[in-house]
Image 1: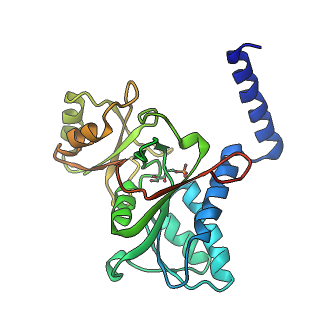
Image 2 (image 1 turned 120 degrees about the vertical axis):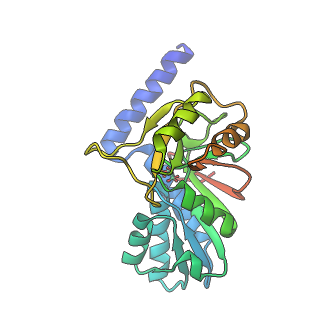
Length: 246
Ligand code: 5RP
């Protein structure tokens, strides 16, 4: 059997298994990674909560530990994560009211072998980056599908102030960055946790030098931050389709 045919068969059987189980294999990986990260939380810690479906698995696993007696406080990167945590009985506090964050756990849209990432699929990357930098340790949890040899297949979310946003977009396009405003299903603009717009850049090919691209984009007035994260993840937990962590 040729390599291409074997790959296609593998894809097919994976899809049918997904539909039989009613749960995607990627979800198993996300859940395993979330559960593993929750084991690392210690009594008394101030924990940073990321945003997204993988971060939600982490928060759910953390809720289970809190119900069994773990005492922690949490700082959230989004309203969704704060709400999930609060509902589960986790004490959520304001980032400005804590001296430090011990450990933040968050997902990613793409991560390369140098632990460089694209984040912001959930539109919370600016707050996520602030949490990551405020933390003693930043752990990234992903399923296998997020691990890529080179960044750039995923769209790069760029948070942009509404004020002057057509001009900001024009300047980005002049620099060669093309994409779309992120919209909601009702046709209105998607707003970030900070009430700003998101311009999702689609790169035509994998990005050779993400750091250089970040610097070019961030210098345009009106840009708040890009979804590139560099040199900040201390550890990456990858959950696989068997529900184990690598
Ligand atoms: C949100 C993020 C998320 O961590 C990223 O989009 C991954 O999400 P998911 O775990 O749902 O795949 O950066 O802004």
